[in-house]
Length: 277
Image (cartoon, rainbow, N blue to C red; front, top):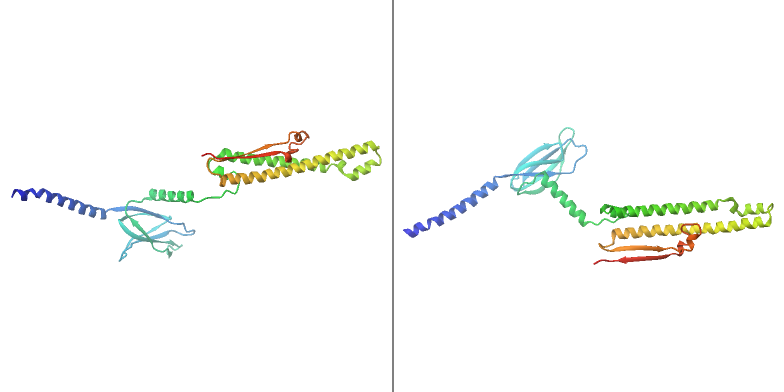
């Protein structure tokens, strides 16, 4: 008799476990969860009608609601469902429905949670997708390295200014009337020989300066092309921790001839690449 009574606590223990688990499953099945969905807005639509049905037969409709915005939040019990959406015309009648879309309700998924999931998915896609930079400086700017971007743009602005200055200086020499051989020839008829020789010598000096301005424009154009290529390579290809330095050592003797870039075509160029590990 004592042994039989001793088994009663064990029987009650297993009975309680069975009751709690069975009762817990019943309470879980009867609980409703908040679920949120959104869709692409249809232009010209006067609203939308949303239908939700159970995925398993007999597939009874559990939600049928008209909304004015391209989103809806409803309450459903745990399970697998399907939904479809149709836009409303000006008479308030549904147009063609979208295909049935399957979804599963296991827990609350309100609007805040759904939007957070959407942003996280977009961030993963953006992170996994490589975007090639076509405009120098924009790659650094988009990464938050504003000083590098501003430096690149300022460098190109300086090159453009210098190139335009060299072009205008060459045009002034080319448009100078005393550099026209015909004009010198006509003046030579009424001027002493020494004055005529002076005009021809001045023309030769101006011609030399004009050629220097032309060469400088070529050099500045090459610097611009090199800068664009180097900037795009740095922004698209350069691994983290690597650096590239370009050093130009101009011909000092050439800089004394009146033009800022005189003799630059004969300068020494140093390209240094360093990698940090």
